[in-house]
Image 1: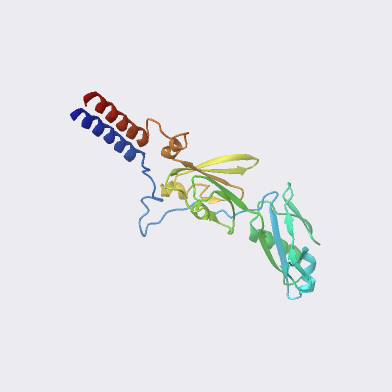
Image 2 (image 1 turned 135 degrees about the vertical axis):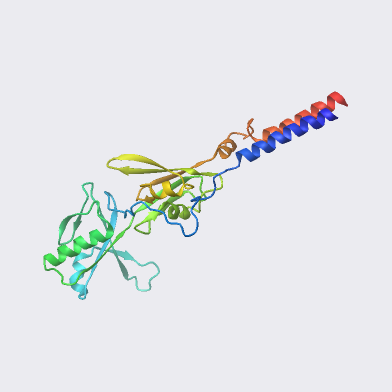
Length: 265
């Protein structure tokens, strides 16, 4: 009976040890960032226009009739309307591979590498310089800017960018945050720059390194991947019952107990 108890205690202790070792150690974001502390942050790089972006550009003025010639409109049928009237909406300007858009009256305009306010200012200056309008108000919005969040998060998927400066925490909140098994110290951001993909590694637990990373603020088309920890990777096996899992050792307990009973009964 003592042998039975010995084997059982040994297996249970081993299982408990593995459970404690497999538990994620780094689950707290921005560790060491105490109240009132300050931390230098990477330059808040605004999202800038890239090839294939779709831009909504609206020009308004005190005289709507004069401003209307600058606004591309698409006639969209209003579903459910009584008289079948049209509901005009502004069409998108697609940025060409060489970084330009073909704008009414003004012609070809280089916009690649510019932020929303910079594009608006450039169009406004051109309109005033050509004496087309005295008081134009130009509004520019991205229509298809998005990021992809994959891996060990609550809701992986593609998410629209709704601000000029989007940091990694704001992005992950769109996906419902990391799961408890997501590796906070090894988040991958893949970004296309100058025709090639560049990979950045972010440690969400290291405040200083994180906030100074070029990938702390995201850009459109960035791909964020959260790697699962080793425990979840093992659980993804066919049965998850490997020598390093508590389930394995509980099976050992059962087997040893059965053998001991058969031998010493």
